[in-house]
Amino acid sequence: MTSAKVKEVSADRELKRQSAINMVRSLLPIIGLIAVYIVFNILTKGNMWTSRKLILNQVYVVLISAVGVFFIMSMGGLDFSQGSILGIASIVVCKLSGVNMILAVIGGIVAGAAIGAFNGYFYVNRKIKSFIVTICTMFLFRGFIKYMASNSPVAASMKVYDYDTTKVKLGITLTVLIISFIVFRFTKFGIHLKAIGAGEKATKFAGVKTDKMKFLIYVLAGAITGLAAFVNIVKNGSATANVGNQLETQILIALVLGGMPISGGAKVRFENIIVGSLLYIVLNNGLIMMGLSTQTMQLIQGIIFLIFVAIFADRQSLSVIK
Image 1 (cartoon, one colour):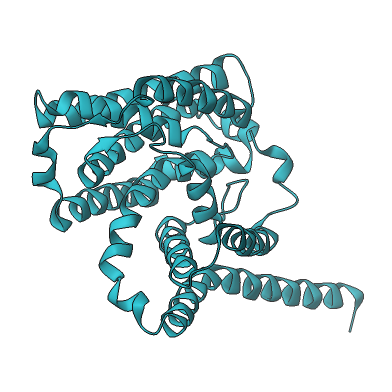
Image 2: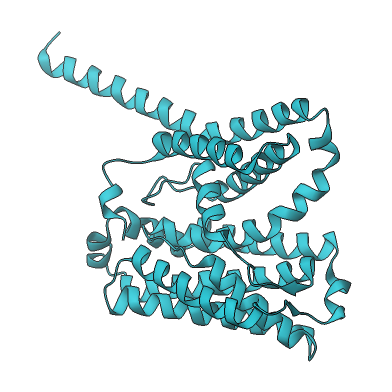
C-alpha cells in the first residue's frame, strides 16, 4: 500500500471517529435528562413524577429567556444581564397590568428590548466585550430593581391571575419555541448567526452586516426575556427586590447542560435549549426533594456543570468569545 493510500485510509478513519464522537456528544444531554429523571424518581420514591406539573411550571421562564441567550451564544457572545432584564420588565408589567393587560405585555417586551439595545450599543458601537458590558448592566439594573422594590414588592393587578393557567403559559412558551425554531433552522438568520460564531471576519467578507445583526440579536434577546417577564408575573403576582436574581446563571448552566458550545458556531443545535432547560430544572428539583443543603446542591451542580463544559467546550475556538 502506497503512502498516499495509507494517509487516505487514516484520514477516513479519523473522520469516522470524529463523526462518532459528535454523535455521542449530541445524544449525551438527552441520555442525561432521561437518566437524571429516572434516578431522582427512584431516590425520591416517585415524588419526581407526582411533581411533574410543578416542575413544568418552573421551566417556562427559563425556557423562554434561554431562547434569546441561545441566539447570542450562537454568534459567540455572552449575556449576563438576563436576570436584571427580567426584573425591570417584570416591574413594568406589574405597573401596566392595572391599565390594560395587552399594554402590560407590550410594555414588558419594550422594556426588555430597550435594555437589550443598551447592551448592543456598547457591545457593537463601543467595541466592549459582551461579557463585560452585560456584567456591568446586570449590576446597574439590579440596582434599579432594588431601589424600586426594596420597601415592598411591586404588586400586579389581580387580573393577572386570570392568565395563570397551563394553557396560557405553555401556549406562550411553545409559540416562542416554534417560531424561533423555524426562523433559526429554515432561514438565513440561523445560518448567519452560526457563521458569525464560527468566524466573524469571513462572514463580514461574505456580505453579512455583522454589526447590525449583533445589535439586533441583543434587542431580540431582551424582548424575548421581556415576554418571559409577563409569564413570571402571571405565575407570582408581584415583583420583589430579588426578581430575576440568578436567572443568567440558570440559563447559562441550562444551555451548557443541553450541549450548547460556549463559543457558538456550526455545532449549535436548537434542541440545546429544550433539553438543557428541562435537565437543569429536573436536576435542581431532584436535589431539593432529596433534602440536601444549599451548599451540597451547589457543589453537585458545579461538578456536573464542569463535566459538561469539559465535554462540549471547543478549546480551539474558546478564544473567540466576543
